[in-house]
Image 1 (cartoon, rainbow, N blue to C red):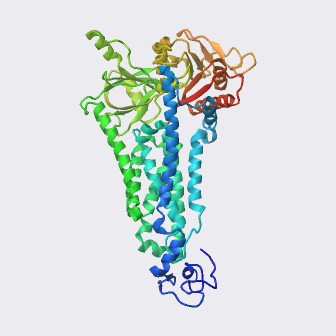
Image 2 (cartoon, rainbow, N blue to C red; image 1 turned 45 degrees about the vertical axis):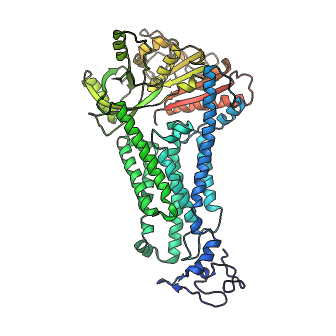
Image 3 (cartoon, rainbow, N blue to C red; image 1 turned 180 degrees about the vertical axis):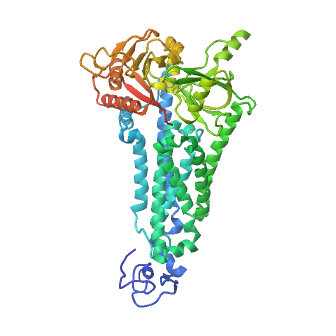
Length: 613
């Protein structure tokens, strides 16, 4: 679209079909248009005058394909990730069963993608996703920006139709909505078909709405500029409902994005979920109103509604089925533990199973029943063979979910109070899950390195127990060596898992509390003491303790230099610990890629369980 009139052409002496909009109703040859002038003096073309301008400049009637492009982009990325995960899972299964893999990734290729995926910055307390998800998010951000801004024009002349820039950004944002809702639920088809774990999906669920918000703001701003060129904004907002009814969903989206920021979500965790769900419903309802099914735009809202509703229904039915249609409600008991912790025990029916490292959401019916909190199961299913009634009764007692938590605020503080004041009382609770678990992947590793910080040991202990009880036999596990490192503030924390630690055997434990030991040697790493720890003994437990924080970088590199085959590094702990271990594994991946002779392992994989899902 030319911004200056031409002296010759089929449109009153111009080649530009939009010329009347640029000259406010007068052709270059002096002929007036057949339309009329609006109350504020801006020319309104006829349909026959408007059609050529629309056709030549990204017509409104064909703008829906920007939403199609967005959908194709997301589907393509999902397809690639799904195929990749499928190949990895099949190869892991073949390793466990002792079968050769017909299709697999070469270790160098795996090392390349892990090197570019694992690293994570400490900026903003580690809130920025690892490099892999960040690349995908940035790729989509770049795609959406180019889709909107690469093609011109951004605006049409007044009264010649909506801003092309506003339409493009609108369709990109609208097409994102079903995917944001699909990734929101704990039970969803994306995890089932793609093999992407829910915590990883949550990374995209947390950050993709910001791209949607960016597109929504571009859409809003472009449409305001377009409207203001035709008539005063105050007049538009009073007379055109499609303008004012776009602000409620925009406000809901802003609320969803801002309130989901880590520090804010943590501060208002007790009420976050309720308001988050309400805001999501408000956003969806107002999107229906705002879109008004123009160009069949409701199809995206229908998809979001069906996916979200199906996930909620799936979870509700699973809830009901697992609890005997709410006729069989488990009851939890609490007990206090050393180092300001409590233990929760919940006897479960023998048909309720879970894998090592899984977590559930607990909802206590008599203690803030509107809240549901995630807790990792620190116990594994009893492996006792059942032949007699007495054995069956014993197994029933052993078949319980055990949780170790440190009370902080809100619900956990209330649980700690009850454990201290009424340890013999039982409390009805609903158990949602299990979710997660890493055993299928870890069993395919020749060596497993388990790292825990504080109560993160609740994830590591059952995994270590499972490997202790199994052997490196085909069909069970490839793991021949399992190392466990646990960092704690106080040595009394070892009492939490006293029986389980005795079963596991060798374990490295590090105490960071300054009052725990008398320092008898250097704490900082030295040539003679490269790990920067001082070994001490405690009379209550057999394992030795080391004082100070372990050098995770050195631990990971030492394992890579000592063991052959595939190594799996599993970490559960505070953010700083996850970052240290993740970046150490990324360095080893780079060494594998460069064929570093000091590194013996052919592959090393990283798995993590974060405190903040």
